[in-house]
Image (cartoon, rainbow, N blue to C red; front, top):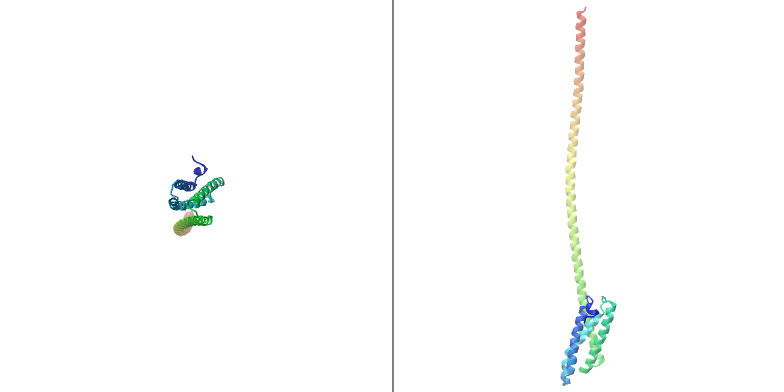
Length: 215
């Protein structure tokens, strides 16, 4: 039957350690039913070691900051229950002092914590590498954009240069046209004066001829 921990997203690891520990506890309890206690105690050592390791992993997952408080409370209750079961089986199968066991368990917890820290550091290094790659990608894209802008500015500058040359040529043509028109105007004025002078001379000649006939 599923529980809150099993249905919470991201907490599958705790449930996986829990299932492994339950299997080891069943195996240890089954060994207690054996008749040869010395043989049972001797074969239970690896199982106890593995149980201690799983307890340390459960404790590490329980103290994960991402775990919601309500789920963490359920984890703590289960963790305490498993720890008591392991303690009881240890006393029955392997008579070791509580101080030695606490030291050993503390060592296993510390080892698990150090392993998790190493994984976290590796993850942070991976994230840092990803950020560096993203920064490099953005820098490359920015460089490409800047290069394209410079190319566009160069093209626009060249276009403006051609336009300026065209304007200068147009001004030169305009000046030539104005000079030509002025020359034509002067010639027209001169021709007009000459035409008037010729007409005036002709009129005077006609008048003189007429006057000479009537004398």
